[in-house]
Length: 177
Image (cartoon, rainbow, N blue to C red; front, side, top):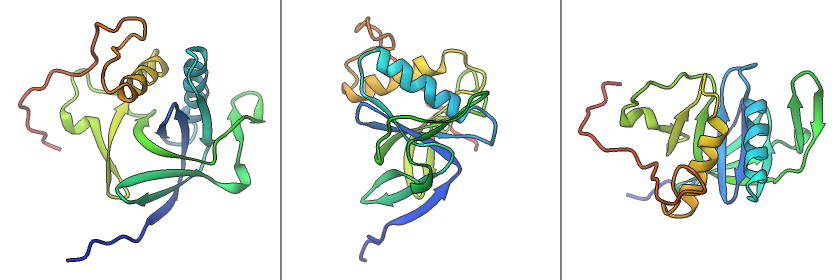
């Protein structure tokens, strides 16, 4: 049976950034802090000397192709980021990024998430997912996860301590969702 190679696309109410080579798709309802989180994440990565740019704020064009999820800026809002209390500002941006992680800003994470809580499917592409609703240090956690992912797991949770490892303990727990 021939595999469907036609790309699947949609525009989604979300924000996307790229940290290093990893795209991060930030989802949440209107007014839940997607733009603010994107700004914090870009700032956190840049302060650590890592490449960080906005891809698109508020609306993101997503395309699933060849087993990857590509996020692209939506032309009329390219390089524009909402800053609450200030308005729309122009920021450096990249036209596209391959998404490597999904962050849900309006979902409170369970204390001990099951494995199914840590994955999501977007346009039939399965991706790692992190719920960060209510987490004060969420930008630090996401930036460290991206750094760990890009280093092949060689870097720990804290960027200055290569001995710590964020890889969670694996238990045989059946997801009921």
